Length: 376
Image (cartoon, rainbow, N blue to C red; front, side, top):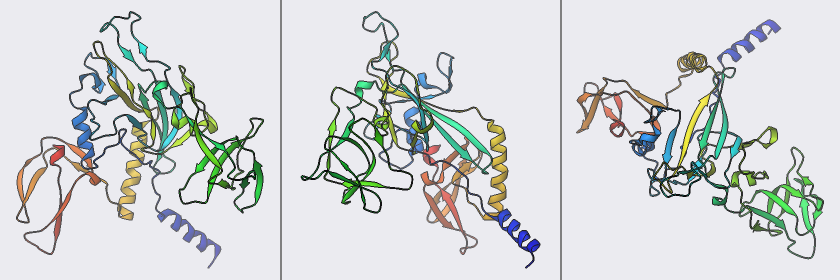
């Protein structure tokens, strides 16, 4: 085959190659304990909260977030104290109050409201096609004060015998001997593993050592113990990455300090946000925003999806029901018309129950029906 023909084949291969969208995994900000019709559970819990209306609150003021109240999301159905990341991304900034703020310095019951100014800010990216990138952010406001978090736990070296703690590389070669009492960071603590993977250790001079790229450091699982730093509090997601928690200031994490988080990973705890005549009301406000051109990103992504759907046989993962669509009920294995929908809805296919029914005129053919009743 000539070089020209080879190049032609290569170009055709590249042209027809399927390009996967770079879409972050997503999760709910409060973990549900029952994964059935979760979207509708959220709608029910959010309904009727006048202070949390989107995009304008009950006073007519701009309000670009929603409130998730512990009192509206019962502990029987949700883990309603832990704030979780809604998508894969990076923690790029935070603030935590040492104590909650008051909108009045006068210590008179019902005359001042206590509230949190703490927050977590995450940065996310999605791309489809790969040169069409959208950067967006999720902001979690009114987080818990610092003393609501437990003291950070740290790992301390302590030899299991008379010999120093042996630090080994991925080949099993001893590269250092660690004295007792050194602070270490454990990356992996698999229960059945004989040796645990080390992320870093701090020597007697306070210098932190980490394995070079491509290497793995391990120590014997019985050569360290865990202790709390008493009298000190920290946000766990920070202390797990050896970042000191700073209170009462907006902290921007840059470069290597930015923490990679997964969708559903716990960021922190819900704090207090009280209106006048309220006390102990726990909630957080969730906002999602971008500075990019959404219409441009959307139009380019839609065009790419239409091409890929036709060429690659892609299937939708959301069910869209237009206003005026027929609703059916299944009786004795047949679909019976009921009425037309009065609303427009879009729900994840993973959230709805699917039922396949044989066509009356052609029993060899089947048709799929989805239970959207909880969303109407």
